[in-house]
Amino acid sequence: YSSEKGSLVIYDTSDINSITALGSVAIANSQSVVVLGDYAYVAAGNGGGNQFVTVDVSNPTSPSVVSSITVTNGVYDVFVHSSGNYIYTHNNYQGFTIDITTPSAPVSLGLLPGTQTTSTNGWAYDPVGDILYQTGSFGGNIRYGAWDVSNPLSPTTLVTTNLYASAAPVT
Image (cartoon, rainbow, N blue to C red; front, side):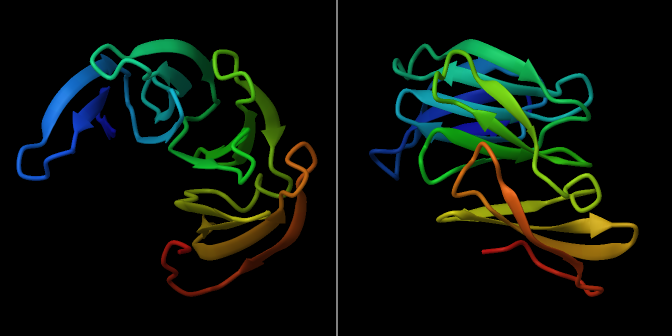
């Protein structure tokens, strides 16, 4: 699966010497993708996109968009909660939690607490178990944040702080 500037493309990689495209679906400003079972979840950037898109990929030769929701100021990445029922995403300003319990009808649960001031140009979220880590820049400083997401409906801020130095994405 590949999110390629304007589409989601599904590839057959069973033979690494002969990778072939099986199917695709147009998604404006697609940025990143994560696949869970029969569904792909696509962050569809800004510049007119601003969408979190759910795609049915049960038939790899004919994927189809089943839903999309608008995320203000764009959406750039998708990360899965350990339960598989929640997605974390961010735009240039905030982090969001999206309930994907019903893939055809995702529901935005709102902002991660504290991200209104920590996620500007947030370029890395990394869920590890029940902790969601984030690095990004804000006001010229590199910021770090961590949230306890053991209850995805009520995440709690563990820390948000300035690192004051260049930082790499959390791995």
